[in-house]
Length: 295
Image (cartoon, rainbow, N blue to C red; front, top):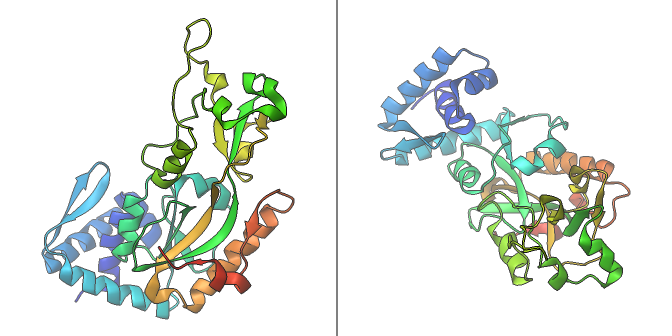
C-alpha cells in the first residue's frame, strides 16, 4: 500500500527518534523523511506524537502492522540492510564491530520496554540485550551469545578489603551498591535483593553517610575494566549468571542471516574475551543448546 521508502521513513523516525538521524541512515534530507512519514501516516490513518522523547503512534494500526510484516519479510529476503538495536551498556563493547548487512540504531536504551516494542512491531529486526532480563514473549526467539559470573568490586582502601577471604554477603550488605539505571534490570535486581544486596545506605561509626568511594560496584569480567585500575574484585561467588543474548522474531530464528550474524558476534566475543576468567562464548555449533526457547 505504500513504498519501501515511505514506510522506512516512518519506521526510522520512530526508531531513531529524530529526523536528522533517520535522514542520515536513509541517505536523504530531513524534509524527505518528514514528507514520506506524513504520507504514510495519512494512508494508514495514524499519527505520531512525541512522548518522553519517543515517537508514539496513535490510531488503529492494524493495517500498518500488516504492511510492516510484508516490508520486514522483503528486507530479509532481498538482502536489504537489517536493523539492529543494542542496550546502552553494550554499546562500547560492540560499537567497533562492523556487521555486514546490518545497521545499528542509537544504542542508548537503558530499559527494555521500548526496544521490545520496536522488535514486536517489526520496526527493528534484531535486538542485543542481557540475560537474565529478557522479554517474556512467545513471539520472540533468543540466542545466548555468552555467559559469565556476576562480580562485586570495590576500590582500593575499601573497608571490606580488610576482611580478606572472610568477607561475606552480609558484610557487603552493609554498604550501598552503585545504583543501576532505574527499571533497567528488574529480574537481576530481584535476585540481588534476594541475596540481601541492594541500594541500602550505611551509617558510618561517626554517623556520617557512607562515602561514595565505599560503594560496591556490580560488574562482570567484560565490564570490570570500566571501574578503573584501582578496582578490586571481592572473593565472593554470586549465584547469578549474566550474559548477552540476541533476540529476534521467532519467524526468522532459522534464517541464514541470523546464523551469519551469530557467527560474527561469537567470533568477536571469542577474540575479545580471550584470557578472561569465567566467560563462556556459545559458538554456532551449540546454538540449539544455548537458544533461550522460553522467552
